[in-house]
Image (cartoon, rainbow, N blue to C red; front, side, top):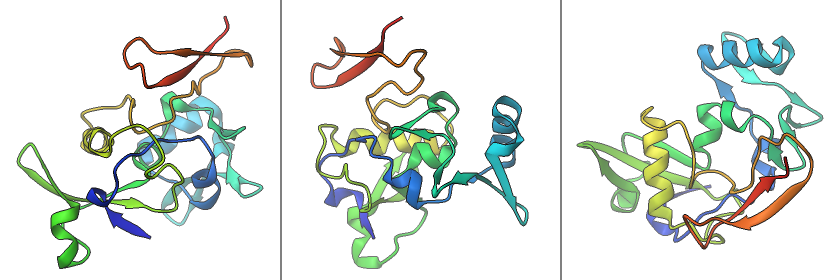
Length: 177
């Protein structure tokens, strides 16, 4: 179910992996080519004229222990989820709750309630929505508020928690090198 973003107070990705199991991830042609070049042709499947990340045993091929193993290469659809962007409201009575203006552009933003991080995290929803808009428009590619605070590009399997100096409320996991 989709709800207007203003109905939500906070959001944080808990790296539960539920979205990586439930949804099929669409890819642009460029994303598909990039992933196949870097990880091999088997990671992408083509259905009709569209490309998707391959699923194995009902989950994204890049999901391991609830974490995305291609954090820096994630497709835009993954970076944006659970936020959905529309140019018009789904229902007129929702308009004022879904509406946001950014750089003179109007958006109607909804949140997929399948996500467990809704109203459970510490990230104020407005920070996550603003970052998601910037990703949607191609202004940002890096994520801070719209992804799990856990390191997802590990070089080793030993993780050490520490508190980020930039944001004392955020617990980040670093690798032991």
